[in-house]
Image 1 (spheres, rainbow, N blue to C red):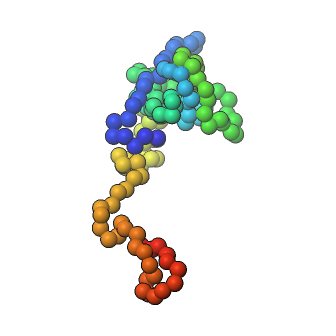
Image 2: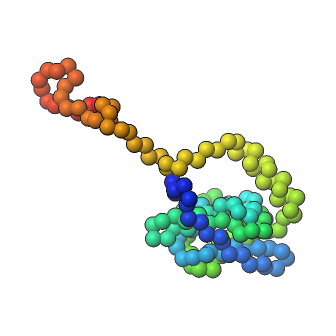
Image 3: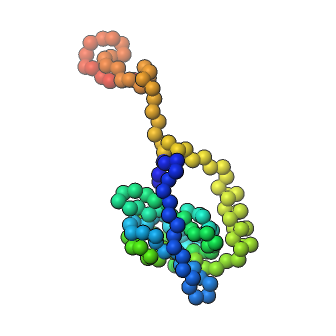
Length: 150
């Protein structure tokens, strides 16, 4: 995942299939990861995974007006990454009514609770104070092998 404040994102393509099913397609070439599992709800604007292109992760979002349940077989294991080309199928969505989608989205948001996303992505830098330098020598001031300590 990216720690950028304004991370790159792309909208997945969509095509209507028979019986109201939707197909979400890849907007580019690369490795796709973190796709939702079968049975998950997908709504418009939701992150549906990440596209890795030349080592950079680009967030994939569902296009506007798309909602449905991810179809497909349920398995015990899923590949970590899948190679995709432009226009390749990512997900097939089964139709769901607008009211069912809003109810399911409300239930999912309640189960998540509060979420805080830090823009620093885990990096923490200290100043040039005494705590950030390594000191050489022994703590007791005696002679002997030198060790490094904070």
